[in-house]
Length: 221
Image 1 (cartoon, rainbow, N blue to C red):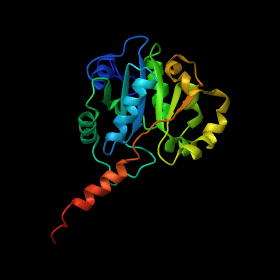
Image 2 (cartoon, rainbow, N blue to C red):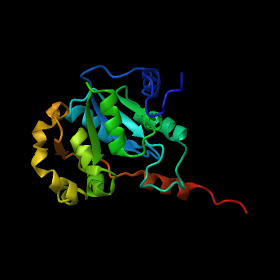
Image 3 (cartoon, rainbow, N blue to C red):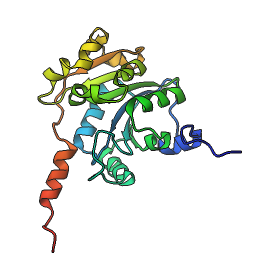
């Protein structure tokens, strides 16, 4: 028998990538993607807000093997980023995973198609910050994201006005729900999305890496 294709991972391999078990039918799961280079408190805050406001069962941090929009230089190895993410999550319902490497997926639209195909009875919600909504049109097959799963956009300091006027927001304006409907978002058929106002941290991984670099002693020649 030929070996299994990396695009068709077995249930056992999927379970291993998800920390030991597969999601049950009907589970409401938020998906937060990114390089997590490194994972930090802002990732945790948006996840906790999603668990509460969207009434989710879990949030998965999809730690990307390599974000196509980010340079390879300075990207920590996947296993190192996963380890840091697990330490930063510190919550039983926040699950960092390298499942995108198992799915051989580098693009969000491809990842979402693969997950919904493998877990058709799970209710997924894509989570993103308002800054990502602004530049979403740079993503591969970006409009397919809205047609594949429900989407929750979380406000970030200084981004809300530009995000709500962005191309993606205008394209799917008629599918936007009121913020009071957020708790039912996971049960909505896509396209459906909501913009959530909250006091989330403006901290970014870029800022954290810059602080670490500044704190390091100069190299010896």
